Image 1: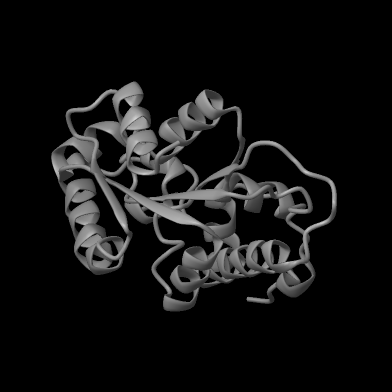
Image 2: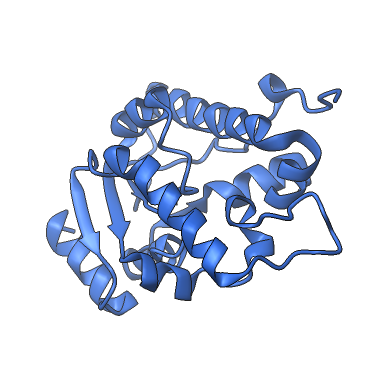
Length: 208
């Protein structure tokens, strides 16, 4: 397949990244998006979701990228995004003081490559949200929006994955990624916590 995306030239529009930065990682269903949004609203900080940034920059959904260009290209896009974030935060600060900071919710697989994780550590504080597999599977919603849990991502007319197979694939993902997730300095189990409780816990841990 010919790759139409010129990844090196994609602009993710990150010129206004504000320090400090809090990065939220974890598996699908752990609550990265809702907690990130809740924390940003509570602190009045900017919020970014890496999947949304990639979709906006490519004019394609994550599922379309997986279908048309395969997972390897999506991972390259994630790496390019993290690299651009790191470079933006290394630029000399101007004399204009900006208030607030930035919350970034990452796709589940984004921190797995060692270089990505190393760059995230340079960006700011990494908080990993976790939950039991049974809780995650209840939260993930339609698998057609989650390519790695959807067996039929290439078949637009058949987007259903049975629950047993979905659970198996999720447990496999957790097993493959757990070693990396465990390296995050801050860990929170969201299984039995409300969004408000998780946000409050992050504020306590990071003294916000």
